[in-house]
Image (cartoon, rainbow, N blue to C red; front, side):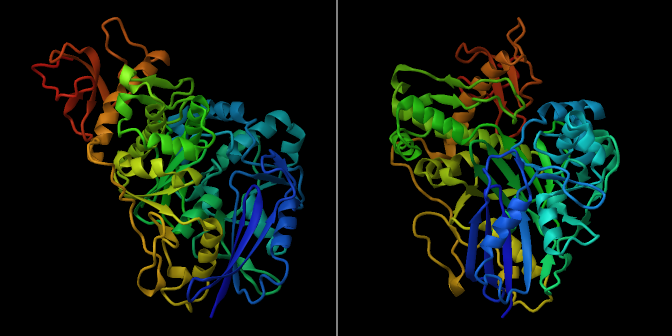
Amino acid sequence: MGIVAGLDSSSAFTRIVVCDTDTGAVLRQGYAPHPVDPKATEVDPQAWLLSLGEAAAGGLLEGVQAIGVAAQQHALIALDGQGALIRAALTGNDKRAQVAAADLTDALGGREAWAKAVGCVPQAAQAVAKLRWLARNEPETAQRTAAIVQAHDWLVWQLLGRPARRTTDRGAASGTGYWSAATGFYRPDLVELALGHHVALPEVLGPSDAAGTTPEGLLISAGTGETMAAAFGLGVGPGDAVVSLGASGSVMAVHHEALADPAGMITSFADATGRHLPVVHTSNAVRALRGTAEMLGTESLEELSALALKSTPGASGLVLLPYLEGERTPRLPHAAGTLAGLRRESMKPEHLARAAFEGMLCSLADALDVLRLRGVEVRRVFLLGAAAELPAVQAAAPAILGTQVVVPQPAEYAALGAARQAAAGQPRRAHPAGLAGRGRAGLRAGRGAGRGAGGAPAVHRYARRDPPGRVRPGRLRSVLDRSFCIALGLIAWGCGGGVPQDGRPNPSILPTRRAFTCSYDSCGPIWFRTRNRSRSWCCCSCSRPARPSICRP
């Protein structure tokens, strides 16, 4: 029997799981909170080591042959020429580099230039933007900086006894803003553009490479970022997408190649297996639900969910566009939310509650479509986050997202992913059905999902049916599309896209929607949207198909 461990050092705690490589069973676990505020923007990295030591106390790692390390992403650590810390680490919570990120975007020639160079556009959380912030706000610190690493790199380096060689992996490197997932190489010129001079960067290891062996003989795998480790622990593969429901939202999928999006909506990450993880972010997800709950006076999201289920799919025509804090997908940073479709019969609390859930999921479906339109195949969606457990989300998600939806059992997927990586990096002694070959562990779809043959967790889709008399789920997305694009037209008007005097909205705002004049029901100039991403058009008001002889551009 082989024994490996996976370590997840998040922004708030350290979690360690010890697993049997033959069966994949979790033998024991350790946990310790970081002795710092989880929302701190600057943290002494020694706090992560203290938490690690506490989590591993009591002989937790006894008999462990290899360990994988996953850690929070976007934490920048500046080192001097001797490897000593120059200042506290800048964490992913630090948003002070927003101006620096915009500065860098312009300095290289715009969003398209960055997307082509490294597969992403600088964001405040990324290391490249933090380097620019250091150069502008702490020039002495910037001048002393001789090497830069991230949290995962630093922890691996410490566990190995601070050797001369520092390492990272593809996943962690792809989030820096100066390593390209498409080429597999650093862009030192971008580091110099941000910081003003060259620095030493960690060596990028492959998925099956080992970072080294500790003086005690413990093998340390390449490790990875927390997002990549969670995807590895979840067992996602080609055809799978992961939708995360936090205050903001994200959609990522497994793909065979890196994607460079000229608009900058796709962030091209690398995963922990040699593939790629294109990610699309939305600014608003659960925050739209919480805002609606406050408006309706419900005490919890569970109450809001129960209220929403009293409504029908489509919310009686009520549409909530949830751009409460602007939006990243589509890129409308100054947009506001919109409530459309108000009629006397729709002005009920349950319809507003339903519209909030459907609006949130439609926004995430738009993000999913960004990936689909770039050739990413999506056959199944994994919903993550506490809101994924809400019955209203589970009821509406399959129809709106247009694919099979699975909600995983709560588990420490980042730590499990790190353990899987450690098992995969060992000599080939593990049984193929063991931890190294195990995928989609602990999934369920509904309450009390059982286990399949051989003890493997069963995987099912949510198949909840709405009561008779409601709109068929298969038609829900088209119903919402009609109302949603009308609301988007209003947003385009208010965000500088403008509607000229001839009544036609600016097509540059919404390239998949156009303005025609419909003579069916005297709809007048109004948005038309492509149906099923084809070249045919339907009226967003009367929903009838458009024909060139009737609907005139």
